[in-house]
Amino acid sequence: MMETIQFGSKTIDFSLEYSDRKSLCITVTPEMDVLVKAPADTSIEKVKEKIKKKVPWIIKQQSFFLSFQPKTPKRKYVSGETHLYLGRQYRLQIQIGEDESVKLKGKFIEVTVCEKIRAEDLLNDWYLQHARSRFQSIAEPLIEKFKRHKVAPSSIVLRDMPTRWGSCTPKGKILLNPELIKAPKGCIEYVIIHELCHLIHHDHTQKFIDLQTKEMKDWEKWKMKLEKLLA
Image 1 (cartoon, rainbow, N blue to C red):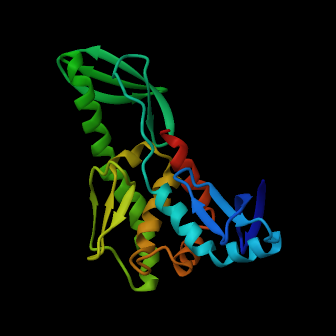
Image 2: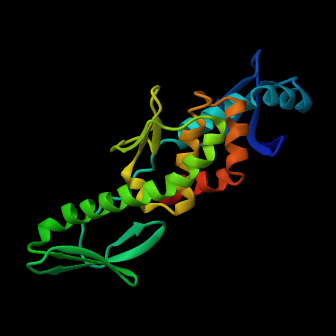
C-alpha cells in the first residue's frame, strides 16, 4: 500500500509491505521509488517514525539516481527528425550545399552539408559551441552570487559524461555535460547550482539540501524535468 510522510517541505511517498521479517527495510530504486518492508506487527506510526530518521539518506539515494543521464533515443540525423535545444523541440532540415552550416530558423534546425553523412558531426559541433557560450553566461551570475559563501569554482569545463549531468572535483573544478544544452535554462541553472553547493558541502547531507533549497527554491521541479527530458 502507498503511504506518505512530510519532512519539512519535502514529501516522501513510499510503498509499504508487511511480511514475516524481524526488522524494517528501506530501499530506494533507480526509478526513485521508496519501498519499505516491515514486520507484520509494526504500527504505521512506528514505520513513519523510522522513515523520518532515514529521510536524509533517502534523498541522497534519490539524488544519486537522478544524477544519471536519461538515455536518449538513437538519432538518424534525417530531415523531419526532432532535436532539442534549450528545452524546445526543433525539426531537422538537411540540405546539400558547399557552405556547411547549422542555423536555427523558426521551428527548424537547418543543416547544410556537402554530404548527408556529415550531418551528425556538424550538428554535434554546433551543440558543443553553443554549450560553451551559453553555460558560461548562465554560470557567471550564479558564481557571483555564491561568492558571499567565499567559494568559487577553479574552472568550468565541458566533458562528455555518459552517466552524469555534472560533477565537482575535489579541487573545485565543475564539469558539465554538453548534452545539457538540450535542456531548458532552469535545468542548466539547477545543475550548476547543485555543483556550486558541492564546493561547500561535498556529500548530499541535510545541510547540502538546505543550501540548495535556499539558492534555488524550485530545484526539485527542474531536477524532475531534467530527469524526464531525454527519456
